[in-house]
Structure formats: structure tokens, C-alpha cells
Amino acid sequence: MKKIWFLLLGILFSLAACLSQPTEIFGETVNVNSGAYTNVNAQELRAMLKSKDFIFVNVHIPFAGDIAGTDFSIRYDQITAAANLAQLPADKNAKIVLYCRSGRMSTIAAEALVLLGYTNIWNLSGGMVEWEQAGYEIER
Image 1 (tube, rainbow, N blue to C red):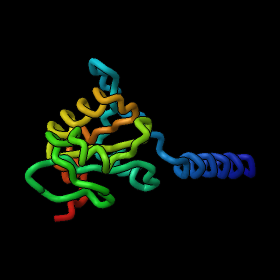
Image 2: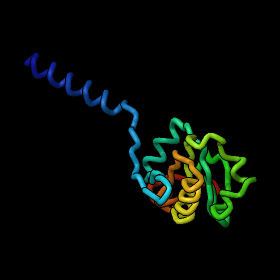
Image 3: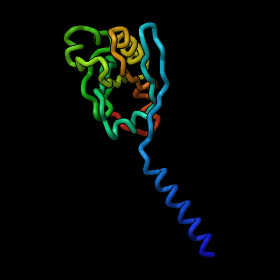
Image 4: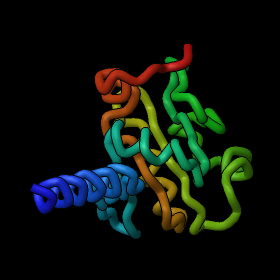
């Protein structure tokens, strides 16, 4: 009987250790002509925001709200303008996460930044629509 209790306790501790491990974010690599960026879903972005180590940019026009933690709003079609690039890190290896309403505008912006040599671009693939469908809030 004691062996069963020790076995159950061992299983319980193992499960607790697994649940306390940070979620590893893999995303989906999207290759483009001059490099690649990574698509993430709403759950992955939520985990990333818990230990935010990136610049978070809303590229949607017209304004439709923000996800909490957004650093900047830069129009997707103006992201490569000099004034807007000045808001982004000079280090082209810095992590930048983009999003828009549906994912289309942020995809265009991600491709534009990769074309300029940025190497650590992330994109919320389903945008704010997927974010809300996952049960997360948008700040209006």
C-alpha cells in the first residue's frame, strides 16, 4: 500500500513540475525572399506577453483597438518610412512582434521589415480577431 502512495505522490510531483515549466514558443516559420519571420497564435502570444522581451507594434489602420502591452501603433503601409523605423530598435536582431485586426496587414509589415534585414520578426497570424476568439480582451 505504501508503494502505491509513493507512486501516486511521484506522479503528482511530476505533473506539478511539468505544469510549472514555462511554455516554449515555437511558432511557424514563414520564409520570404530575403529571410523569414515567425507566425504565432493567440495562445502563444499570450504566453510571450507574460515575460515580454520584445517591441510590440499594432500596424492596423484604421485604429480598432490595442492588445495590452502594445508599445507603438505604426501604419502597416508606412512601417518602413524613416520616421517610423526610428521608433524601432536599431539592432536588426531585436525581437519585434506585429499584429493587426486579421493578420493581413501585419503579414505585409513583417515581410517589409524582413526585406530591410530584420531577423527576429514575429506576427500574430490571426490578429485581434483570433485574440478575441481565444477569449482575450482588446483595449478600445
